[in-house]
Image 1 (tube, rainbow, N blue to C red):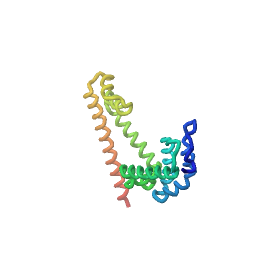
Image 2 (image 1 turned 30 degrees about the vertical axis):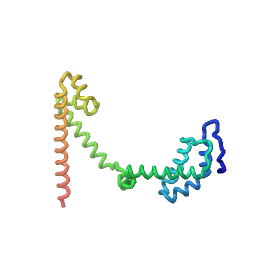
Image 3 (image 1 turned 90 degrees about the vertical axis):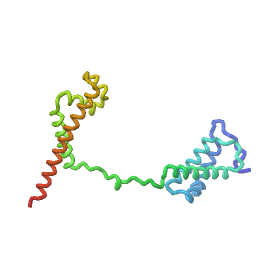
Image 4 (image 1 turned 60 degrees about the vertical axis):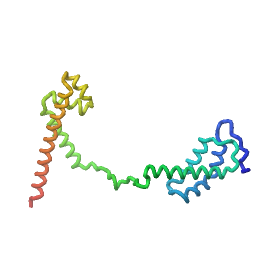
Length: 191
C-alpha cells in the first residue's frame, strides 16, 4: 500500500489526492516537459490536478503515483486529440507583423474628415424622405418593416429609398476618387 493508501476523504469534500498531487507537481512537470511544448506544461499539470479534484476518487487509492501519472497520460492523449481536431499545428501566433498597428497620421485624419464631409454633403442633397429613410435604416439600425410603418409606406418603397441613397453616395465617392487620382497624377508629372 502507498504512503497515502489509507487516507480517508475529508468531511468538506476535498480530495486528499489533490493535496498529494500538489506534492507531485515537480514530477508531473518533468513528465510533461518531455512530452509536450514547454509553453503547455503548466496548463497540463493544472489539468491533472483539476481532473483529480473533479473526479474525487475513492478514499483509498493503493498507488497514488500510478494514479496521478495515469491521469497525466490521459490528459496528454486528450490534448493531442483536441489539437488534431482543431488543427492546432496549422495555427500561427498573431503578432504585430501580421496585424500592424493602424497609425492615425495627420494625413489620414484629414482624409477621413474630407470623406465624412463629402458623405454628409451627398446625404443633404437627397430628397428629404430618402435621407430620413436612409438615416433610420443605416444609422439608427431600424428594420425596413419598422421604417415602412413609421412613414406609412411599403417595405419595397423603403428598399428603393435606401438604394437611391446608396447610389448617390457611391457616385459621389467615385467622383471624389477620380478627382483625387487626377490631382495626384498632375502633381507627380510636374517638374
